[in-house]
Every structure is written in C-alpha cells, then in structure tokens.
Amino acid sequence: YLLKPISAYGHYFIHQGTVTFYDIILKALFFLPILGLFYGVTLLSWHQLGTVLLLLISGYFTTFSLYFTFSIMAFWFQQVDSLRMTALFIGRYLSGVLIPFYLFPDTLQEILWWTPFPHYAYTPIALATGQIETLQALQGLGILTVWGIVFYICNQLLWDKATHAYEGTGI
Image (cartoon, rainbow, N blue to C red; front, side):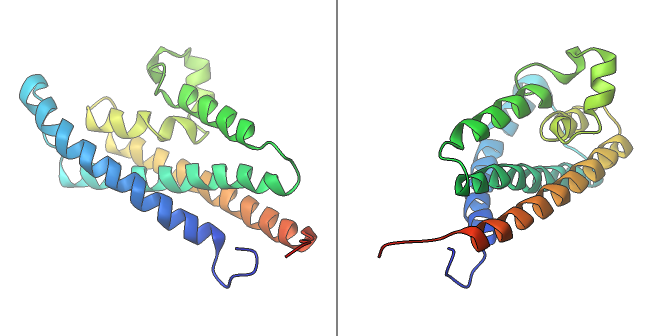
C-alpha cells in the first residue's frame, strides 16, 4: 500500500467496516426480537434510532482511527500488537463493556465523559434503554466525533512521516 495509488486507511476502513456492520446487523436481527419478547424492550423513536446509528458509525470511525494510529507504529517498532491490545482492553474497560459505566465513581465518570471511551458502548445503550436523554447522547456524539477527527489527523501525519522515512530493500 506504500506504492499503490489508494489510501491504506480508506481500504482498511471500508474492508473492516463492512465486516463490523454486517456483524452488528446480524446480531441485531437475532437479539432484538428476543429482547422484545422476554424483556419488553420497546422500539426507539426515529430520532433516537438515528442518534444510536450515528453513535455507532462515529464510534467505529474513532476506534478504527485510534487502532490504525497504533498500527502505523510498526514502521518504528517491531511489536505493535501489544499496544493495540492494551488500547483495546483499556477502551473496553473504560467504555462500560466490562464494567457498567454507572458503577465508576462520579468524579471518574465526569472525567471519562470527555474522552471517547464511554461513547463507544455506554452512550448508545443508555439512550436505547432510556437511561439518558437524546441531548446527552448528541453531546456524546460530538465528543466522539471530535476525538475521531483528532485520531484521524494523527494517523495521517504519522502515515506521511512513516512513508517518507521508509526505506524498502530487496525485491
């Protein structure tokens, strides 16, 4: 991808995105009827559904940009998989996937709210279950989008620096 006229970021973003959203759609088609039948989960309004979808898309963009930034470190380091796995674990822990977000101390919740982590998982789920209002979810969407843009700019700067410093030898 160093010599090809296509963006490595764009190629991997689309490839991984199609796999990810295919997986989400299949899981939703399977689990939503079960949740509705056994737990009485009601359907979301159109604006709530749209906000949840935007949060999922923005969350994917932000997460992908963060991990792509770590992957670019392979130009300088031999073992970047441990960096990506550490970031993945920290992200899952702080997003409320492993421990519900509302169980964190209030001070930590306030600090984490301004990071992208709780908006990957907690914010869409909390909106869907009625724990937060749409306005709070939109604030989370804004925070998530800003972080995604920051990570995207970082990985583009690193990519430019890496490709200019790369010296390929051999065939």
